[in-house]
Length: 108
Length: 158
Image (cartoon, rainbow over all chains, first blue to last red; front, side, top):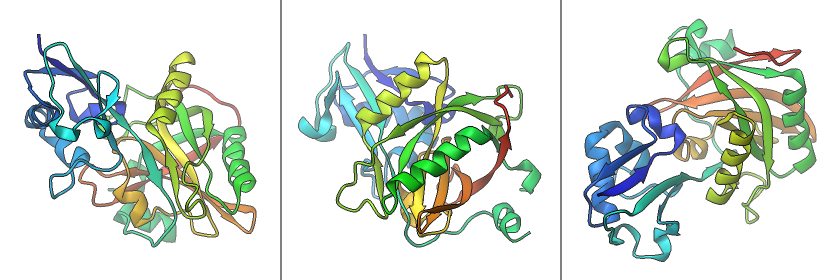
């Protein structure tokens, strides 16, 4: 038995194509640390450079949002399911740099 | 990366028009919704073409700043996923409008983007839809790669 972490579709290419992974973990923080140790490419998408969970990354333990529990300190036990669910945000403001290919395309 | 290497996104003229009309309908607020479709599995993994076969229009939850922001809640994301699965499809990306602003991703868009998804942006200027573009976050999160939108008269499989 272990804690099961469900991986959302956009992150699966960075997790060996897997939809779920199991870890021994006593807290959400430990489970996410194990997840990003096994799949290092996930780290920058889940956490900011300061090591905080990104605002659009939503984490649920057995269906409960950890924001209403004790955030990443929420304890976990064998058989628990951690679900990572995206929220999507954006909107017009100032422009960002795009890759050379798309610059050429726009001006070409 | 050459333009020819840019990922391709296929969409029917009808669905492209629906995205534009959604942007007109919600103007001057941003519209948003999910792109339901399929990704081809028989080409290079980093630039697989996608086909958008349906849309799942959503309500912009940013009622504090809907003119230049949109928000899709986790509950909406689950609904969109369920809707896609019921059709045998996946959520392959998201669309939103930029009212009176170019169809280019903002810094805010990039900071909040997920990898892998296609992000379609339609510019709507004074209620008239303008350019429609599609973008994918680079794996290093530093910038976007623009995708080539190919409009098809009829949907067909990639």
